[in-house]
Image (cartoon, rainbow over all chains, first blue to last red; front, side, top):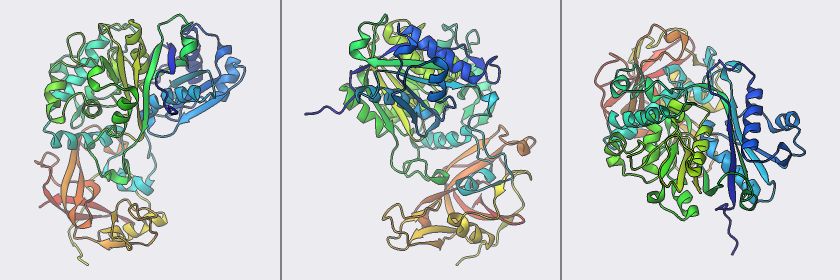
Length: 389
Length: 148
């Protein structure tokens, strides 16, 4: 019987990133950031640029493979892929697509990357500068609903209402990311710890999101290199295998004006069961998780939808220290995440997942064997990965 | 067809983007309706499914035989949020405001986004009853809500 699955056939063998700058402050072009991260990832893999034959990205990355390959002197391209839609929700999808290309025999050595220097191009998530709007935007923008924070706060409000979850859950998520960033010298918020008091006193952006419930904005780039498990054995680092990958979206998610039939969801309900089934493991087998914080509310929903706790227990689970290294049951975002390390549209979370499984994290989970990476959340499509060593 | 005469002056400051006065064919019926103070929701003539925002085909049966049905203008708060951070230059001095996601029980529970009129700090509960209030501009009318 043919096994239509990427399970355990592909490994992440190299990771690379630039320094992370505040948005608009990168002293070089976005394209240069991409070149730097990719070269670092390939070097980390113990490979050469000449070994690279494929590229995968997401979120309408501006640095297309043909330009990158031309600049790098890549001998040929055998895979050139953009994960379509979902913004940062495609992050794990890009890694999954890279793996799929390798398993399909299209390419042997694929780089998944993201480079971002918003100041050079205009702010991510900002639109509707014009005096008139049309189409779907006309049903929301005139009422002052136009930013990502506002779109996701509405959904989060409904989720918290349905499951009787209080602000303490969101605070727990923010505090975990910030705590972990304090051990990571590369984190933008390194040296800037967050107290519970400071979290609650921070200004409202849109209820229930305080300032510290919202991801950072940064310039920088990150990249990972994937290859076959056979090739991975000869390379310097402990291979980090993809047990499983999933991407997609539930029924009529993100139809116009918040009419998703199942509204209070991070959109992982169809992915999580598929992911765990492909991997052949359960949520209890996950040692550490990297969960994309566009906003803390999305992490809350993602934790529930991946089966780590019931919705009705989520306030106690998230608010009670379970997400914090080293004592927590499910340490998350162990290098600081989108909230406190850097917002590289989540790709930095995959890098941290790899570090955890190599044993090189600054908040190293003892005997970490399996790491979940979840990208989105609350967008469409979303994506996730289960990594193991 | 019920005509709700309740109107309001603009809730948000001028300078906020408004719906185009020349909507695409897909949306035109809705905005013609609001100008006439009629709340219209698209309804499939073949299977009766409501959908909002409008689509080209029925998502239930894929028929192209779609029409507009008037509804009562009564709804329930499905979700809401109080916005503090100004997301548009026109909102710089506005202060906090309320956005509601209103469910329409007599239109297949489709939802519409609008502002909840009145004190931005009023007590709002999910499930609260609301009714439509028309916000007339020069060439377009917005759909707003207030608690009843």
